[in-house]
Image (tube, rainbow, N blue to C red; front, top):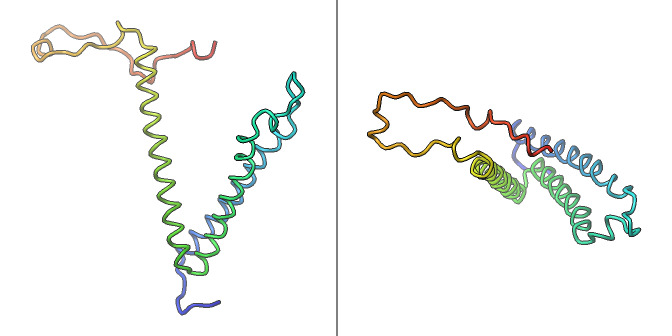
Length: 154
């Protein structure tokens, strides 16, 4: 079905990227799923899909459905369908929300690590204005990113 419009190079590039990302996601999903299927049973003789049937079903069926939806959206974008534009905007909003959640979660996790694992004497106490103007130099401490948290890996 042809329309009276010619699609731009940006639209073609976006749809091509969606198709390539879908193929990559399908390969990655298969790479993660096959070891679960081939995993040996536990001591009770049960496989992973028997121990966790709901999680296994979600991991088995949800990614291919999302990938198929992405492929259909990319084809719709190539055909300049209006619903495909809306679907692409929904995917972009979902990706933005997920990325912001990961960034916020990372910042919260870093604050938690600092609060839990940094000893109280290593944290700087709040400084009043009069103390700030004092001539005694404050000791320099390393930034939080330079602190080694070796007890995580024991």
